[in-house]
Amino acid sequence: MKIFDSHTHINAPEFNDDIPDVIFRARALDVTAMLVIGYDDASTQKMEELVSNFPEIYGAVGCHPEDAAKYDQKLAAKFKKAFQNSKIRVLGEIGLDYHCNVAHSLQKKIFEQQLKLARKLKVPVSIHNRDAFADVYQLLRDNKVWENGAIMHSFNGDAQWAEKFLSLGVYLSYSGVSTFKNASEVREAFKATPLDKVLVETDAPYLAPVPYRGTRNEPGFTRYTLEFLAQQRQISAELLAKKTYENTKRILGIQ
Image (cartoon, rainbow, N blue to C red; front, side, top):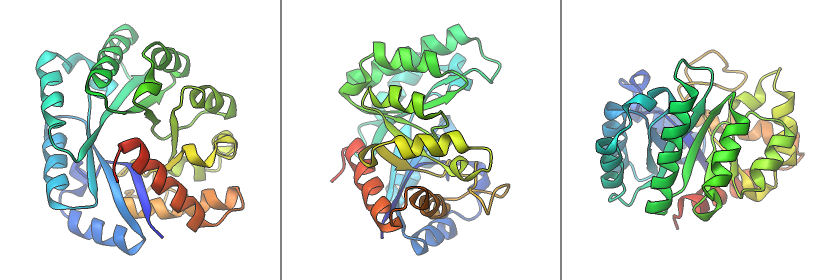
C-alpha cells in the first residue's frame, strides 16, 4: 500500500528537531509521498531544502489569506522562480479565511491575483477555505480553475458544497477533521465524492485524527484518516490508498 499526504507542513517549527524521524515513521505507515506547503519565507526555504533532500517530498508555494497584506510583485516573482524546481508543483495554499482579522476585500483581491498567476504558470492551486464557501466558489468559477486544477485542502463542507466544487473539476482533500465526532456533514460529503476526486491529507502539525486528536499531527497519521474513510464507504484501505495516490499524482502532474 502506498499513501500520498496531499497537504502537510513538516517545514513548520514544530518539526525542527525530528524531521528524519517523522519521515521514517511515515514510511513505516506506508506514507510514501507528501506535498509540503510553504506559507512564508522561512517555511518556503525549509520546504525547498526538504524537496531537495527527500525523494518522496514535493512542494507548494503560496500566500496564505492571513498574510494577504504581504503579497506584492516581489513575492509573486519569488513564486515564479520557485517553479523552476520541477518538484514544486502547486501554488498554495491560497484562498479565503473569514475567521481571521484580515479585510475580506483584501483577501479576495490577493486570492484572485494568485489564481491569475497560477493560470499564467499553468499550475494547480491548493485552496484554503474557512467560513467563505460562496466567495471561494465564485472566484474559482470566475477564474476557470478547471483549466489547471485545484485541491480543496481539508474540505469541511457538506455534500451540497462538495457537489458545487466538484462541478468545477476540483479535487476534495479530506483530513483528520473527517474523524471528529461532530463532523458528520464532512463524512456525508466524502461519501458523495467520486473516488477519482478524493485526496487525503494531514495538515500536520494540525488536525490530528482520532485517536490522536490534540497531539502533534504528522504525515504518517494520513494512514489513520484513510483507514477511517475507507470504513465509511465499506471499501478496502488498499483501494482508497491506490485511488488517492493516483489522484494526487494526476493533479500534481507527476509520473
